[in-house]
Length: 339
Image 1 (tube, rainbow, N blue to C red):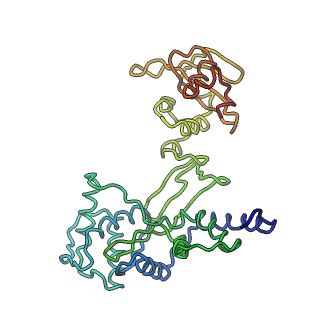
Image 2 (cartoon, one colour):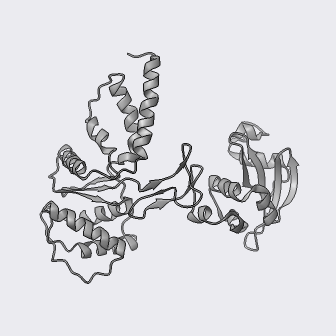
Image 3 (cartoon, rainbow, N blue to C red):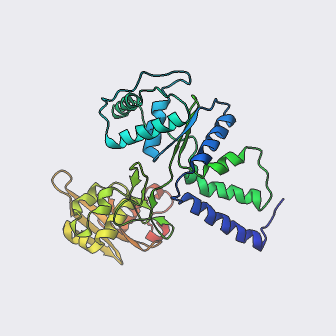
């Protein structure tokens, strides 16, 4: 039993953490030979017949391919391919990629792939199927894999499970092994942007894959595209009231500036207590007047404006409203006690 880490073991833990982050952020293209070996090894582990490994450009293409190929039994062949399918260019490219890889591995060489993918897209659009979560998360899971690698490689802990499969999986994107022997693997990130340790990009997507899958983030908070790509001076203050997530509202305020937002909203100050103000804002005919607590978050040094009850008439009442779930513990709360 290990009661305490040595100084060298503590240093090694930091090294493994950095390696895990580096692997998780890697934009290096997937090695096709390694992917095929991994696909076969995974099927052997799952006791399934192995047919082929298909590498696609990202999560959406992996999901689309998975739903498509899940419809094919391992011994079924479809009709000859039609050339008259109405597919978008990115999906046509995906079909060509898949078709080429299947031909190289001598699998389903006479499938009507265009028809198969067209039917799948129609199924997705009709909401008869939803996103399929991957069997393995690949590089996204790398931080945890390297955490356990540390215990094995540095502390000598032995695992009964087949840890090597999980260890190998971080070299790829999302992984879908199908019962018919087809293994779908997505490429790694095309780009990923950070500020310090947080996902962050002020001009476009914070992460993107080659298949067009992308997401926007500010200071580690997932935000809508419009909040990132709309210049601060062109942001509509009325949009602030439509944001439900507190963290996204914080980023809206950070971008526009709290004083500008308050001014543009035509807010009326009802009460003030130090850096905290209770404001009344007219949000239009459908919503009417509502009250917001303008406050500095003591723990992170960022301004917030949080909606409170219409019956709040003082800053203290607004703070207590935010702590409504804790009323049984205390009557009056201080902001620093909540954060």
